Amino acid sequence: MEKTQKLEAAWWWARNARLEALRQKREEYGDPRNPLRALPGREAEFEAATELSQSMGVILKALEREITRARGEAVKHKALRLWDVARGFGRASLATLGVAAVFITVGAPDPITQASAVIGTSLSLGWALKIAWK
Image 1 (cartoon, one colour):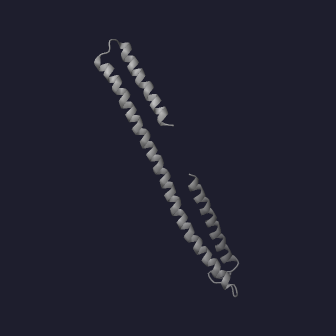
Image 2: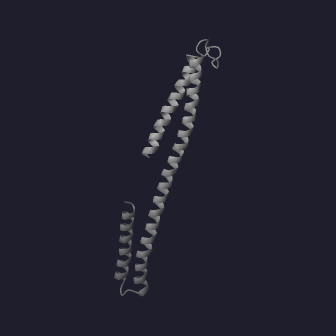
Image 3: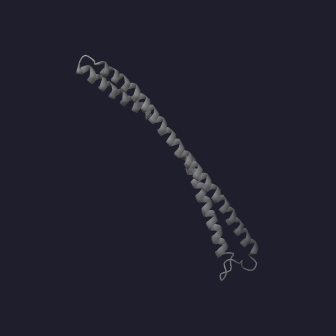
C-alpha cells in the first residue's frame, strides 16, 4: 500500500508539472489569437514548454501503468491470504468434525458424551479461526 501511495504522489507531481507547462505554453509563450503558435521572439521557450509537457505525459503514462500493477499485486496478495485462511479453516474443520463423527458413530454411551464432542468441535473450530486470522 505504501508503494502505491508513493506512486500516486509521483503521479500527482507529474500531472501538476505537465499542467503548469501547458499553462505557461498557452499564457506566457503562446500567441493570444492562436495559442498553438509562439509569440515572436519566444519560440525557444514555447518549444521547451512543449517538450516538457510531452515528457511529463510519457512519465504520467508510465506511472499509471506502475500504479495499476502495484494495485494488482496488492489484490493478488489479499486473495492468496484469503485462500490460505480458507484452506486452514477447511483442514481444521475436517479434523475436528472427524473426531466428533467418530464419537457419535461409535455410539458414545450417553448424550452427554455426544454433546461434549459437538461442543469440543465448536471450540476447536473457533480457536482455528482465531489462529488463522492472526
